[in-house]
Every structure is written in C-alpha cells, then in structure tokens.
Image 1 (cartoon, rainbow, N blue to C red):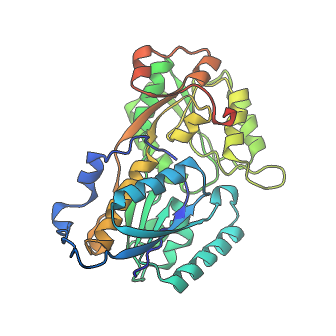
Image 2 (cartoon, rainbow, N blue to C red):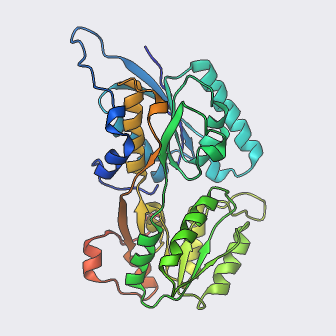
Image 3 (cartoon, rainbow, N blue to C red):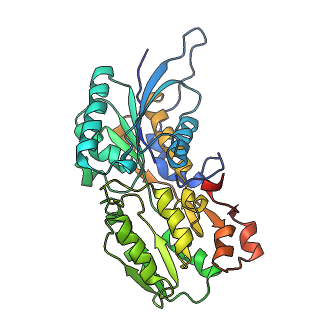
Length: 359
C-alpha cells in the first residue's frame, strides 16, 4: 500500500458551489502534460494512497476545511487514506512555537514517508516544505500568497500548487456600488510578511482608480494599536479594506483571535468595510468578491491526481491560480452602517443576514 500524506496548515475564501471552475481547469496544466489514464484491471486491487495534509492554521475553521474538501473532491475516486496535521499558526505567531511544530511534522514525514503531502497556506510552505526541496516526496500547496522562490523552493521540482490571488479590483468596485462617492480608503494589515505580496498587487491595481486616495497604513502590531487606528479614522475616510487581522498582540503578547477583532470592529467602527475572504463577511465585514478556498483546494486535488494516479512528474505541472470569485454581502452590517443595498445586487450575491458569533 502506498502512502500519501496531505498537509494542511489551515486556512476560508471559499465558494459554496462544489462545481469545477473551467478557468481553473484551463490554467492548471497544458494539455500535453496530462497523462492518458489507464483503465484499471478489474481483477487487480485498486491502489491505495496515504496523503498527509498539513494545515497552516487550525482544524474546524471554514477556510481550511473547505480547502481540504475541495482537495478531496478534486482528487477524485481513487482510494486515499488521509492524515491531517494542523500547525495552528493563526493562534501562535512566535517562531519558537512554529519551528517546534515544523520539526514535529518533519519527523512525521521522515518516519512515514507519505506518497504525497498536501499543504494549505503560507506557513506550512515556509516552515516545513522549504526543508524538502531535494526530496522524492511530492508536495502540493494551495492558498499560498508568496512565491515558491521566496521560500527557497525555486529549484524544487517536487513542489507545485495553487497560489492565492485576491480580487481587489472587483471587491473595491462592489463596495462602490453600495457606498457612493468613495474618495478615501484606508488599508490595514497585521505583521505577517505574506501580506507584502498582497500589498504589491493592490498597489499595481489602484492606478485604475485615479480619483480615489488609497492609504496603505504601516503594519499594525497590537490590538490596542488597531483599536486606536479605527477610532481615529471613524468619520474621516469613506471605506476600510481589512487585509490582515490575525496577528494583533494583546497586553500579554498573545495573538487576539481574528473573530474577536472583527466583532470589536462591528461594534466600534462606522467605516464601511470590505475584504477578500468569505469568512470575513460571515463575521460582519460588509462585502467582498471572495477568494474561494474550495476552488483552490479542488485545483490542488486535480494536480495531486495527476501525480499519484497518472504518474505525471510534479516538475511538469506548472503552478497556477484560480480566477473565480464569489460576491458576498452582509446585510446586517449594511443596516448597522445605515446603507441600502440594491435589490438586484443582492440577487447576484451570497447574502449573510447575521454574524457567525450569533449562531
């Protein structure tokens, strides 16, 4: 029996449809790279794989769970035994914890020699996969912001996957439909380095909106600083783009849970807000054209199927990204802000009428 290990360091932008995006299929690999499936011998037992899934974040979070579900669906009908390991990096920002967790995972990989490791989000790539650039084990990633090269994996022929690319322009144009005459927008990040690439992509796009003043604030380190920033800009800007909200330290130096950050924001901010991930809308952010964690996981699963079933060399499968986004609006947040959302816009959106913490 072969072994595959699917690594998921967790992470939710996600689509609630379980259909395959044709754009993702088209951009996944060139046709000549796809091996012709071999019809299995009816008398021969089906090959079973073990996959290690390393989540960068924690189990139970919709973002990471939808990636894993997408991966399973994309991998198809082959027999797979999954082992899931979570790094819980959203709740542990210090390198000492992350390095210790990475060593634990590397010990597992070295001992069990999985057939394939599937990792989700950046931290798993940074702390674990970066140590396997010359390994025979294939690694497939999804929802990664920084490039392979930035993690020292530029020459790693055994590593491929799906990058996360936010829908900034579409999300901004969505909030423009809800909030007329936006002139000033503040953009907020936490201290995580992965947001640097997001910022660079956003800076490249804002040239399309010459009449809007986009204010990129310096990375915010503490929850107290975040609170002060929001209160300072209340009534002074027209919109708030919430990018990184995970690594704000409390008075003890521990990271404040992102849902608590968003709950405080809902209670204290008068600024219409938007973001790029579906779970933010479920947690009171006004609107988004959201990245789909499910679709990224699905595309990663298709890549894994090529490697495991069709025996395609990972080096022959280029990295890719999905293009499909999902319009999402929280009508309770709109009401709190005194905003009226056009009925036709709601008909085309995934509508949230309450907040996740109320369930």
